[in-house]
Length: 68
Image (cartoon, rainbow, N blue to C red; front, side, top):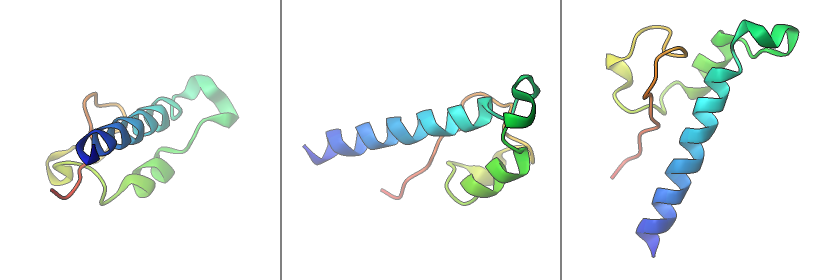
């Protein structure tokens, strides 16, 4: 159903967001993603973005928002 497709898509996108945040960790050294790049990539796509801290890459529970 369309609702199932929408839910699967949101789950996949949220997993990618989580992966991008994890990849900013310094343990990845030179291969780590820059926080600035991650913040700019996801800007305008997050649920309740205006309520998030300036650097939300280390905050759990950040979700991609969609228009209903």
